[in-house]
Length: 190
Image (cartoon, rainbow, N blue to C red; front, top):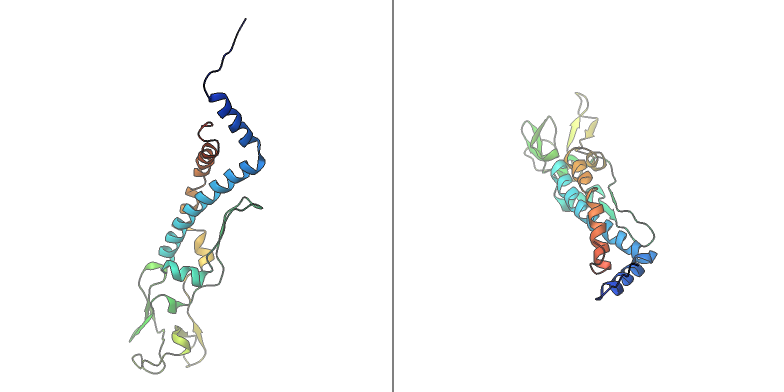
């Protein structure tokens, strides 16, 4: 005959933990918390990497690139980082006109754009045309001209260091869900 005697407060703690885990709302809460925690960490890293990759400050990245986040909530257990927009005008990358053309810093490095211009008339006139945008002639005549652009945020987001930063956080989700379950069950489940 086998007799099992349980002493201490372990059994009531285990029963409470099982009740908590059996509740779908509590499980959803744990998943939501874990997804948002890891998602926020990924967002910080992606935003930092993306800003450095394209050559903008993080503030300008949000303004010009439509950088948005949708966190996990009660109706959807997903975390989205999205951007929108077309290529960013070259004027946003510290463009300055010189006698040879324009110098700007798209993709985080200084580049020369020969024969490009910001000012009307002479290169040192100081009369910016079209709100300081950078232009280049498309023929030997004075017209037509075309506006010059730098990187496109949506395109840059899925390549290079930015894509690597985002994929780095996926494996950390399981560990965070386990942490949230330990928190909810007050350490009974580990």
